Length: 272
Image 1 (spheres, rainbow, N blue to C red):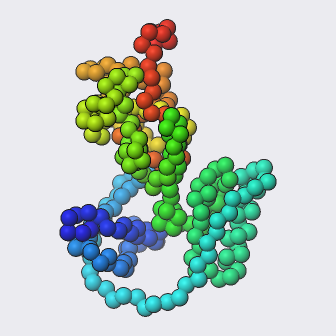
Image 2 (cartoon, helix red, strand yellow):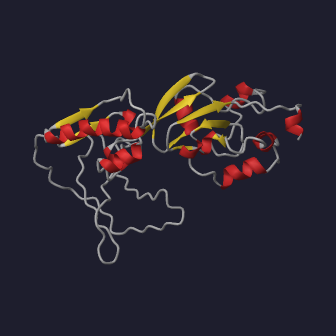
Image 3 (cartoon, rainbow, N blue to C red):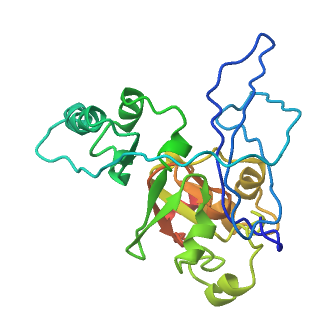
């Protein structure tokens, strides 16, 4: 981090080491310090384990000798399979390039983002087949978010916040209190700025809901409590499988998003 506490560079330690008899894993890594770095921030994150527990101790940051320079051979694989009928056929086709890089004794293999597209590969099978142990570090997952109404696609890192990334792309998910009413004020200042309290950044995840985090307590409360603003909970009726607050969504895979979903205030479906 720099002198303004802004992150300069993020490194991910290799945690796939064997545990000792007490279950502890000793992790040691050497990193090059960025030129403008003034301090380091060390974090331990546990994901995808709702009932899991993790502990750590004796974290240290010490000066180390720079490793000796060495030459490495890098193979870059950018392949979009065509003409196959199944993901397994695509996988086998891609694997032939991986084998070729191995025969040429490549030290590092770089993969294209198509690796994550299930239309081309069963990417979980591919990851297992090529022996990737730390997906975030070795591949650097990035996913595609398609905004249907805006006809715009963006690529975002794994775990990104939907509302934050949309704003970076010039897309406001706060588009009015109901059916566009108050859009300018809502997108400019009349919102809770990502706290999940106002409920005005609601969107429909029309594809890829399985690639989002589970709905948390704040989001659940906003959709199931009609006070003081009834519109979020009323608009949730009939959209329970697709509606989310964009400020509370983590992007864990490809998805399609519809911003500013309308609500039928007078139709029979609303009052039913």
